[in-house]
Image 1 (cartoon, one colour):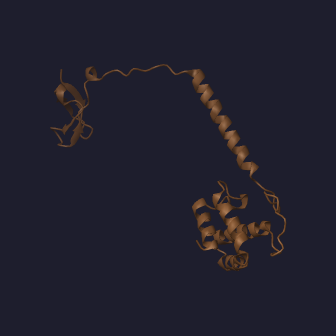
Image 2: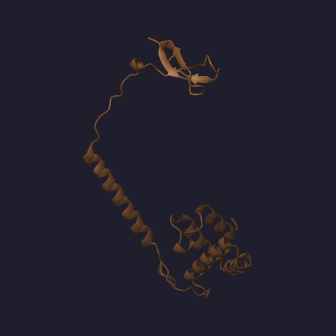
Image 3: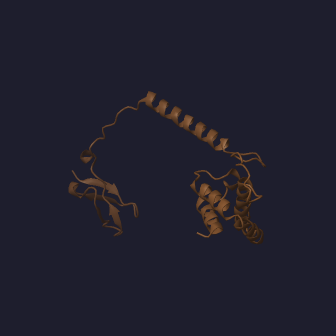
Length: 170
């Protein structure tokens, strides 16, 4: 039994042999390339199974739980202004600046770079470079941290890493 369909371009009825189903051909009227549909009796029915509603509910519950946990973890990292997320190490005799101060300056440097305040960033970098070992320690830790300090969360991670590497000259 031939396959009958209408040309999508000119609307004329077209007849094609069963063996041409699923292929392309030219409309005899307008000569446009048309798709010859498969004959309905040639289409194999799909084997469908009913959905498991209990499984779907469990998946939805797990997704909600995941979102809530992620939200809690992200907000757990937020540090109030002026506070450090890590206790300050005991001050070292050779340098009056603490690790917390270096970390604060590194954060300030990255924010200035992101905001385009290059002169201010250059001044902060000059100050930081006088504290070489502490600077390297802070930058290495920040490069290893999965989540940056909250003040730097708006800076894309690859850009932030570039700022930090530039600061220590890597």
